[in-house]
Every structure is written in C-alpha cells, then in structure tokens.
Image (tube, rainbow, N blue to C red; front, side, top):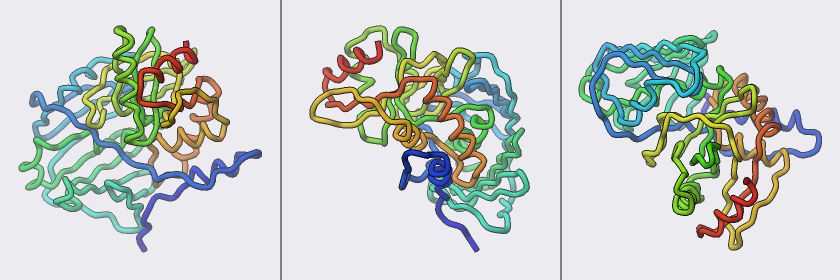
Length: 323
C-alpha cells in the first residue's frame, strides 16, 4: 500500500517537547530547485557548500551553471567529502514496497539507503533515480531521455542536499540573505511575502550591502556562534555568492500597515524556522536532528519579527533593532 503525503513528524516532536505551548499544524516540506545560466561542459567537478566537499564524476558531459563556478573553492575549510556518481541507464529500476510521495519525487527508505525517483520536467515519469547511503550519492538517468535532455539536467536538484547537509549539522533555510558590516541578515517568510523587497531596500539605503543568496541560505553552527553560508541554489533570483559570515539576525517578514519590530516566543521561532527549512519528509531521524539544531540556533542567534510595509521606513526600524 502506498503512503502519500509527508508525515508531519515535527509537530509530534515539538508537542512532545513543549511543556508550555503546542503547535497544531505546519505546512508540508518542499524540496527546492534552482535556476541558473549554463556556461561550459565538463565530466568531473569539485564544489563546496558550507563545510562539505562534493566530488562529482559523470559518465556524460554536464553543463555548468554560471553560479556554480563561484563554489569551486571553499569559503570555509571542508571537513567532509561526498562522492557523487552520475551515469546513464538503459532502464530505471523502480523499487518495490511503500514510498512517500513528495512534491517532486517518490522516496523509499531501505536499510539505511534512501532511493528517490523523479519525473523530468513533468513530461517523462520515473526517468531519474538517485540513491544516498550516508556517504555517497548515485544518480542514474534513463539513457534516451538523458541524451536528449542533458542540457536541462541540474544535478543539485537530485543530490539529497537537505539530508547531506543536515547529517553534517547544517540547515537549509528558505530566505533572502544579505551581508552588512560583515554580518548576515536573513529575511525569511513564505514565498511572495516580501523578502526580496526588503533586501532591495537595504541595497538602496546602504552601498556596502552584498547579496548572499536570494532564496536559500545554509546555516551552520561554529565555535563562536552560527554562520550563514552560500549555496548554488537561488530560485529565480540569480543571487548567490560563495560567502560565509556570522549572523546579525534572522528576520521573519510579515506585512503590516505600520513598520515595527517585535519579539517572538520560543515556540513561534521554532515553528517558523521549521516551516521554512528543507527536511526530508520520509525521515523521522532527520526531523529530530533538525529540531535539535533549531533549538541550538534560537538559543544562540537573534530572531525578530519585522512587521513591515514595503517602503524604506522598514529598513530604518530593522537597522535600529539589529545594530
């Protein structure tokens, strides 16, 4: 019997842990896809995200995104190596047994092995298979489809990034992030709330502001606090840099008629962070690990709610609160 829809493990965990408040519901987890400009062909690549080194070997030429070139050298020392193998297959094998159906793939968990089956561009069903065993990633592309569509193939979308980075103590947060005074400000909220608008306002008001990422930010604990790291996935924003910096604040964006900054309760912080991070819907251990990291994050870093208009006045209110 097939299992459909991600199990909301986080709600159960939070309710078990919370003595003072409870959470009734959270939106489902979503995997993320990037959008980049292709640049060159290659068979083997080395990329760095946070403290993880991805070593990619492909049996067929891969076209590189322009943004990926920024991640061929580490921003911080790499502690982990992940081997990624990409190959064509005459036929894609479909596993037996129950699976979880996520928005972009079907997920099987088999004795420590995670298997994902993907459609390609909503046209070709079950033509890409990826496996993650905790140490390496294997990706198979159906031969005929692969030879036709390799120019539109984006390996990052099939590399289990949220699981790999979570295993290495990092979270992927849905956020538009900037650097100001050598510290990162992360604007997080559901899509179409105004995250990018807020970063654009800061660019207009402060000439020294730099983009970190327009859609996703990796959060990593360090010896002196958490740091924000770049990732070569940025939605449709085309804003991503290989930069790592300490965090000035995580800002929950909420539209309002009057600009103000307010504090959040512990449960509000946890709920909103979990709602905006990428977590594998099929893995109870991942939900547990993510919750542990979130609790550490909110105990270490500032998180505020920005009730804001889409005007420059929002910048003044937030700057006063953070700096």
